[in-house]
Length: 188
Image (cartoon, rainbow, N blue to C red; front, side):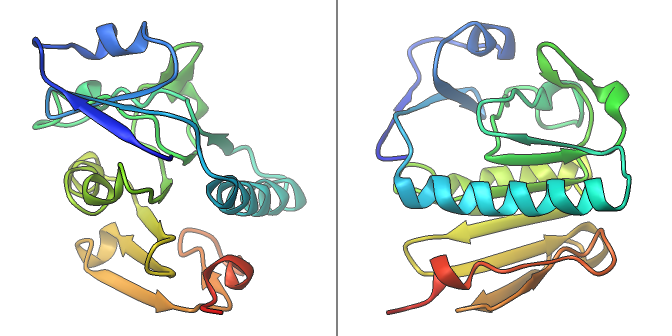
């Protein structure tokens, strides 16, 4: 995303944010409005989502991959998230009963966020903590500014694993799945 506006004019609810147009998130009760994504952001999210979908299809899995502007109703999932409503860049949900026309109402198995100037601090801070509290098994931060990937696993209490100019990043919730982001995260 190119830029963002953080606004706290009144107390917003997740339902208020759901009814708004565009990429709008509620982070600890504050509204974050971001505009369009960059081409690089789009390339990276597509690479991750397409790799996950191909793996699921080739293994006849039933998990669903959602990409950008799909609501994650954090307020319904974990204590301490009552003022949070996110639209992660990528979500993977294996229990499809958690999904309806309004979004995802249960804990995703995997989330990836691709940073932008407007969201970087939240991706590393509030969102990471919220995803840990929700029980997201695997959370990736793809940091386009610093050209690194950071992986957090619930089984490791979200201790960060850093990938600097990675060639392959293993998706830990699946056996034998690695995603190649070297085209996007190599320092030229």
